[in-house]
Length: 320
Image (cartoon, rainbow, N blue to C red; front, side, top):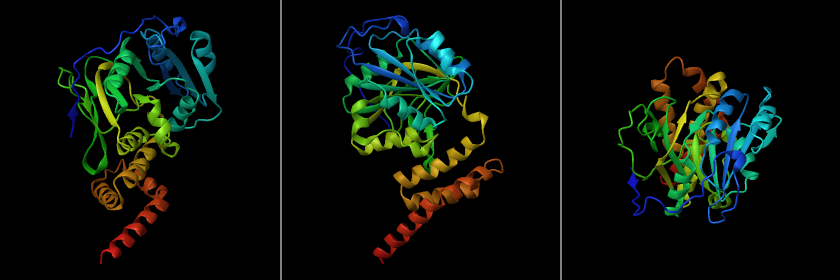
């Protein structure tokens, strides 16, 4: 279920423009400070392309933070050389997507945080559009933009919702953009490929959950925000392009994380009975390709599953 948020004004504020990260001056104190956090690990070619696009962003009060998540390909040296104004925070080991972003957030100074994947290309006005929408809707704590693939206008994401058996689905995925998703809309989850977060929310409910490591950390944060009474919104005037799976396609363990974190997410936000039905549905409909990853995920979640089953059994006896 979606609700459309109407605004009588398409522009809330006038932003002082700048060209290039290196020329960013924080002279206009009326413009909310934004911290752009990009986590990367051994993706220096893709990251460089991303940062060149960020270099064309027109926003006057911006800091860019790159978290080098245990890279061994000389990422930090390359960024220092080509983008001297970018703040680099280096971790000696790969902390995962959630903890890597949290490391960047802890070092960020902005009243808004934007988490951006390293395999994206951004448009010059995307930060301005995100901030405008968040300023117009004060109950919005999280927002995400319209996301295309790398070529053309085929959509990857035009708002997130939860589909059958608790799987996150991306509205508009694979559709040609013909303006069918051009309204600011309240949705169920914001995409971690590009997510703007109000600092106040993080102070209130905490950061991304490190234990997710990779996948579902954005969905979990969105649900926690909504439970705290905030809105999650889709902002179509902000546009980026996203390659997708630039890191995750390289190792089988990310497929395990996807299955494991789905169960973890369901247990936390939908309860034991729903999780049991979802697991049964998965086992009945599983493909041979996915079977090993799901079985490993079930074993990995055994302690939480047993605890949930015990609670479910105890709750059922309460009503006998």
